[in-house]
Amino acid sequence: MRWTIKPKPSEEKVKQLAAALNIEDFVATLLVQRGIETYEEARQFFRPTLEDLHNPYLMKDMDKAVERIENAIERGENILVFGDYDVDGTTAVSLVSSYLKTYYPNVATYIPDRYDEGYGISFKGIDFADDNGFSLIIALDCGIKSIDHVAYAKERNIDFIICDHHRPGATLPEAVAVLDPKRDDCSYPYDELCGCGIGFKLIQALGKNRNQTIEDLTSYLDLAAVAIAADIVPMTGENRVLAYFGLQVINSDPRPGFKALTHQVKKKILDITDVVFIIAPRINAAGRIKHGNHAVELLTEFDFEQAQQFASEIEAYNSERKDLDKQITKEALGQIVENNEEKRFTTVVFQEDWHKGVIGIVASRLIETYYRPTLVFTKSGDKYAASARSVKGFDVYNALEACSEHLEQFGGHMYAAGMTLLEENYLAFKNAFEKEVAKTIHPDMLTPEISIDAEINLSDITPKLTRILKQFEPFGPQNMTPVFLTKNVKDTGYGQKLGADEEHLKLFVRQNNSEGMAAIGFGLGNKMDLTTNKKPFEAVYCIDENEWNGKTSVQLRLKDIK
Image (cartoon, rainbow, N blue to C red; front, side, top):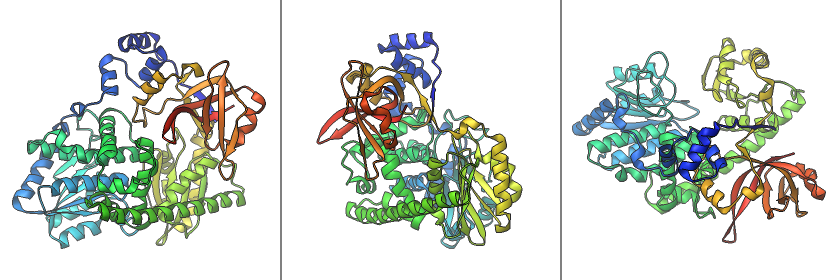
């Protein structure tokens, strides 16, 4: 691990904010590092309100989208709500379709089959709409580059409204409305919404048109919060407001689908981490293993018993996903060793029977062992298909573009991408990709980095600090959980390894004469020797709360020690 301490912000800004908020300088430092410099910005950060959400009609084409939907309702047209098979897509489809159904019956949903149709708007989906009398398709979390598909639909008298958050190409599809804050000609104040977030803005605009207030729509925010957490979009601006209130819905009055997925979780209050690690993988598992429709069924079901039935099916898909993920990761790691590829700049592995639905997860797993840009290939029809994952700071999309002569097609962004190629081009591509990465990657990028917010003493960790840090939630990109460094820490002699393979580390630590504090380090069991015989060490950690037997205590969640 490479430890880097974030640069200290301007002392003057820190002092001003500390005085305005009556807080310690180092808490003010954490805020300024997050771009919060004034009392008003701090108020919005610590006390989000639904009034902080922007007027949805500021988004380019929103008026056209609302008008087309209202006309469809007036004329009794059939509306098809179409979305991608991942968490963002299925939550967006669930949100928009269930809202429309509260006042209009002729609404159906469509999720493409991951294996048969692939990502995004499909010709098969448009044929389904044509065969079943749908004249309006609302596409969510996809469609911004579907120029041919929208033209194909137009020939069949089917209109499109596109709600997407991906980068547009040079030309936009000829849809009735294209809602995407990343359009160059869209001056909407916040352009980091996910697909479900744009779906929420659409129902917000429809609601405004029907004299509904934002309070009438809060029951849909649980879906938005799950999509924001799963899609790893910045936890700033509107995303933070939607996630903040969405978590409140998840904890106070969740829809039956979420309640069924989480009813066995022992925690009283679920936070964004629970959404990322408990809810999101299960929703994703439906599209990976079976079909994304199962997720939409679960999320739009209002009978709890029926939702429990759907949730147990999804639980089974998730178990299958976990087993596949373990097995394929083991096989891939074996392949790397067998081929003497431990010292390369890239990981590129292939096996024709690997399950296409989990190769993206496997790529992320391989990065945990060999920290470098990674591609996992499997056979898909008569071609090879791969998922790519990257390391912090390296743009894998650009690297693929540089090798595109060997590829049939590819798409994605800086840290994740997908591609297909012909079997005979696999080796040439593998070598070209290795060459390109070796040429362009900075050596530092091949070591995982821990970014540290501040150095503090254990005596600084007071109940007041813990309370303030809790108010930094929900955490996510650009508002990550604060990470602290403390030097000259000693274990009091109660250190032990935990877990079946002794892979975790549990300590009870002190610094000088501070009170003792529990510390847990997942995956740090191999560093036990650094802590024995009261040897001093440096620790990098987050401040955590541990619930046990109804009691809550502060503990350090160790990220690394040396």
